[in-house]
Image (tube, rainbow, N blue to C red; front, top):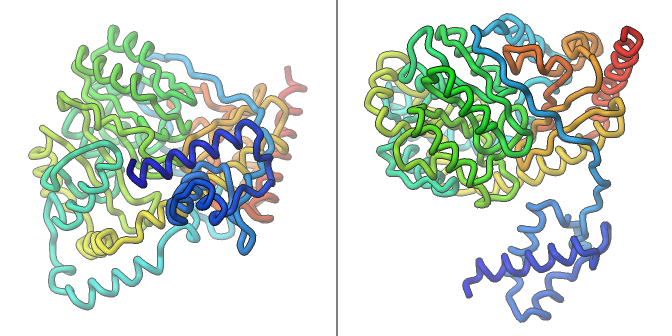
Length: 479
């Protein structure tokens, strides 16, 4: 039995004891020394097991004291309802989206609106060091053009990291992009022409709606379950009625719902794509923030017929400002490289080299483990606070990773009005209408929980909850 399997077995047994109530919330679990002696294993193996339990949110370390069962009140709010299918249509939200984004960047505004991790959760010091090293020792190359498909050492590191998503590729199959949106737009330009129809999850990432608008595409929104992702039944019905050129979706931690598609449904989706000749663009930007790693693979891992173009970036884990993304385009790679060469060339040379150096020198996995723990802790705090502070009947998503929450308010509450009132109080939120081309989500909001849970965050969320209650009362009086 390898040490890896051994520590997993230890973690699994202790997790079962916690769930059965052998160890109660707030109680101390056996010390590393005691557990090591009881099971006749090394201290390192026990520490690995306890680290695994920390990643699951079951225990917490207390300095100079030991490990304790994490004490969390039950989250009882329901999850949001699934959407309905509407006819395809041209995008109409671009101006509203732009307005929300501009307001969210205003100085002095508490940013619940933009899905950007707090600066405390970015490895800025390490990135500074790598940038300084690259500009000092490799300046001629760092300040020159770096044409498609990008910096080979970085493509090699990405290929290594893709193993964690279940995708086995060569570095030559990776194309470095100017962020994930750049990868999405190149994918759409290669797969579609103006006037074509694409399918998307509903609700969906508002940036996709902007891209569709710019490219002259129609969008059919496919209802998505907050837990299991896009409705395959609704997708099949839509494909029977309309010619869908491409489907843009997320199998791991969709934005904004946070849903994760089970493996069997992923395989079923690929069979549907094959039957209807639908190309899939997979946006996996939050994939590395799954709380339990190696549990869910990317959709691309099961793609045997080349139907999936995979897109991701380091924006949510390293820094949104480095603008480093990548794509695995398969049979479309040559066309993607031609398009990139005569548009953006590639991503910035300096940041490509710095990120490659950071990944090569280690520390990224430690950083990921840290931010997963922090996001999990903060997300739980935000969920419970929303449950306590928002109107009765509020529904809350249950993502298995990342740092965004989808919240559905009861009744006829207009969250565009909530957005306006919150902004008057110096708080930015993302109203639900920007995540769809329909009116189905006007009572919803997306919250950025990639922020430290502290008194300032608590006060800001309490203000939003109070405003939501006022709107609920106003809406109730108008019925």
